[in-house]
Amino acid sequence: MPVTNTSDTAPRNTPDVIADALIADIRRGGFPPDTPLPTERDLCERFSASRPTVREALAQLQMRGYAISGAGKRPRAALPSITNVLKGAGDHIREIFGDAESGAHLEQMRQFIETGAAREAAKRADNTQLTKLKCALEENFDAIGTAHFATTDIAFHRALVSVVGNPIILALHDMFVSTMIAHRPPTDDAMRYDQIAYEEHRQIYQAVLDGEVLTATDVMDRHLTRSYRARLQAPRLSSNGDDPPQH
Amino acid sequence: MPVTNTSDTAPRNTPDVIADALIADIRRGGFPPDTPLPTERDLCERFSASRPTVREALAQLQMRGYAISGAGKRPRAALPSITNVLKGAGDHIREIFGDAESGAHLEQMRQFIETGAAREAAKRADNTQLTKLKCALEENFDAIGTAHFATTDIAFHRALVSVVGNPIILALHDMFVSTMIAHRPPTDDAMRYDQIAYEEHRQIYQAVLDGEVLTATDVMDRHLTRSYRARLQAPRLSSNGDDPPQH
DNA sequence: AACATAATTCTTGTCAAACTAAAATTGGCC
DNA sequence: GGCCAATTTTAGTTTGACAAGAATTATGTT
Image 1 (cartoon, rainbow over the protein chains, first blue to last red):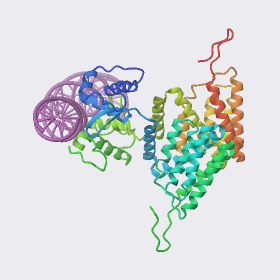
Image 2 (cartoon, rainbow over the protein chains, first blue to last red):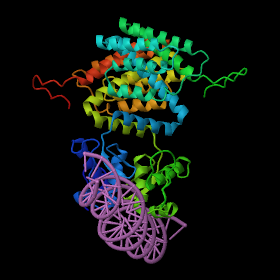
Image 3 (cartoon, each protein chain N blue to C red):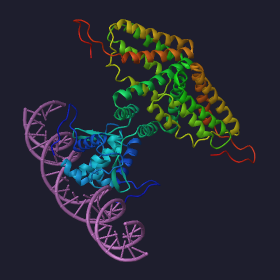
Image 4 (cartoon, protein in one colour):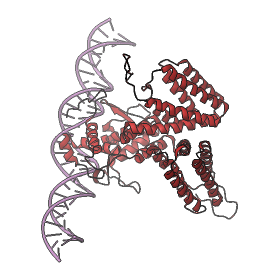
């Protein structure tokens, strides 16, 4: 099988060539997502290559998000989604830095992004976006003191980030908060915690409504700082026969 | 070769198992970066697997950043770096959205992050960091009107983002600007363009020095907005016998 | 001893053929 | 049409082989 050097880069192996051809096919719509890819033996014929070589190419497709295989089933076509790309990057980052340190770094990044989004929303949110934001705020208010507060908290933030209209930033937001639902901050007074958070949400909403860029920026910055620190709160020892802390 | 189901996930193929074992070895320091990995035949012995299976595992290692191979040479151990992770994610994002749209989305993300970084620097830059920032500003001043302005421009931004002390954010910044050096904005008056940019840098520096959080945020926001729009400027037709625009 | 070059060995990249277990398809019956 | 058994097909992996290039060893010269 002659491997041609396609450009000024290093010579590319046959599996690379096959994978790129299949990826181009998938991206062109030749294999809609979830349709089975051709069998390995068909691909051997099509590309005049051996089966182990084709298998290496298919493994590449899987790792690059263009195929889903496993559990002994036929590989199926897929398209990489921004969610998967960011999840992969997030997993790699956690591998490199460890859970705690990468968590802190990513939280700071979240802070910069959501503060920027609040700023942008105060500059240019339109009436439809403001209405959605208000609905999310009301649901957050109704959930004070209940188990749903966290999800409505996140929904308010998401509505705000959605104003920006940037799919990458929205997917980043979703990635940032995807582990937060399971982590309720340790607190003795859930009602008070919820009320503080809701009040800050309300201030942010009011600043956005009034086009107050500086206020929106400042309150969001403080809200996220306080919220993260609350989540870092160390669990407290039981002082008497109460239940142990919930973790 | 019996493949054991290691947890509640789908059964994993032998190459997956081998790749994970090698990755654990590399991460534990068993193979320092750039040392050759064991030969394929050695790995066949160690893992009691066939060579095509081992080759699939090695391909996995390469795609996950734990090995460097190619050009017919022995695979060498590597560790994924945050730079590589982000570059990979950036490439995927460009694949999904196309160059122009992903560029705009990423630029907005850059704006949120650098505005947040300016804000953070105004809050808490120490004397060492301020000194570095001042040096970068002076080099930017000295480069007005020369071909070095762009690199000193970027160096000033990098010095500012470095104040945050977040390796992910710094690597993101590097990724954002990595294509900018080659793209000088189309302009008839490079001197004037440089002077405007420098003056904005100076205002940002002054705000950071004075701990003026609001000013640092505002000037950086406007600086990045204007700068990006200047880079979006459409090329102009030649109005007389002058040279055509430079691109 | 140091260096250069040729010869030899080793290794990667890929091929062909085969086997096993599981998935998918086909055919028959109700 | 639905169900089930039988058959075929497919993925996962094995063994063995060859070609080209990289790496190592051996040899000769200064």
